[in-house]
Length: 302
Length: 302
Image (cartoon, rainbow over all chains, first blue to last red; front, side, top):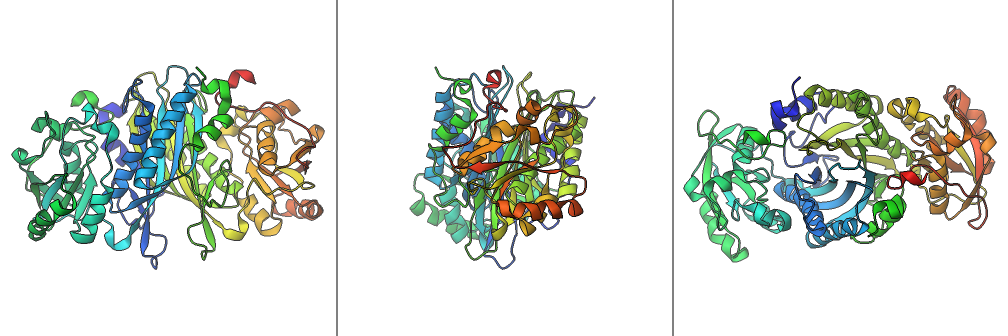
């Protein structure tokens, strides 16, 4: 009997999505950071849809402060809206918790959800609560709608050979704390799409070693990166920058001719956030490969 | 330390939703079957948003066929869209499963999701997969968008004293199988809102004894029901019809003057589905009370 561990997360998703009716004219292919719905060709905006879940003992520990868990649950989703060039709008929160859970824990979780909605923009529209059997992990599932101006939408699949690869911020070591309190790069992306629109973009959730090959494959490209150029969080090694995951920085491709202008203009707008050229997209049959990063169903293979 | 079991599901939701920013002008109050978003006052339609979750050993057994679980997960959400007078559109599916889960199980789950989307209308827009720790219950969380014509929206909160209370179909005993293979009452509700629009409506998910007081309270009414009039599934008692839950029939209030016409017209359109007058809404300080029904965090109190 084949299990999810045997085939891994990406193959599972490919097999499952083939079994159900899908939007025949999606504005973004399956596997992008968000689903993109084009409801009205006359509208200047597109709707973004996203769901994401945090599982106890997988994404957070029983000892993690609930307020930080709530922040993270919402911030992860907002990071995905940012990665498409968009904004968050309405949120639905599904809690599956044991009846023995303290009310104070659930309230702190919601305070964290509220903290992030207030900082990033976004409104609670509804939710659902369910019990889980005794001993089962708590699950917090967030679904949300967002919006993006049609001309500011950035996909994973539209990078071109020769484009420069860049990342915001510093990578690695997120488990030391950043994975709980990061601020989604909404503001930076809004500036980018208005001034130096990337050709392709995604947020780094599973680690560069897993996410960059996804973006390159979606763009039908290969890639080259310069490991020595990777911007490292203090105390992190290049291997950690590639594989730790949960950096929640933006990885993007951009026309190489625009990079000098971008690098010159960036510090005036974001003096405290690094922006680093880490490599380039190349033709699909060229480039290098990377292994590792986070796979939900194959942790022991890392 | 107060736990979720101590306060129950409804009180928990009240406490949590007070902690986060919410839509200040919602087209439906918190606690209706779906959230209703009014994006554009010029638009003839409103957007519906809904999330719902199935938890292993709570909503289905490990031995339940996965295809039936998938059907149920989607059908529950579509039943909520129907309860507002609307239709489903785009679905997001979040799976939290153990790595030891058979790929065939997940594929059957998705086949069931696809079955229901094909029958009821609806498209998969995206999803998310996560692992859960060994021994933890599987969680299937569904989020979806729907749409409703502005003039066909039916809320829980707009019933009036004197309105007749009616239910579609038969109640009780859903655990014998109906909870897994019910067809959401989309078609019937479309006919109702076009011809005999209810003043208030909801779907029966937690049992009439829990759901009717919710609708009456939302409408600032009391209620009277005639237990002898309850339409029973074969083999069910009135107590089961009140308390089993998961009937997924429609409960609605309608102007009493329209009931004779409705009862005369219904059989021609839906000859095989019962439609029964079960009571009426009354003033808030009158009427009766009901106890029981399904509360996720207080099962032992039933």
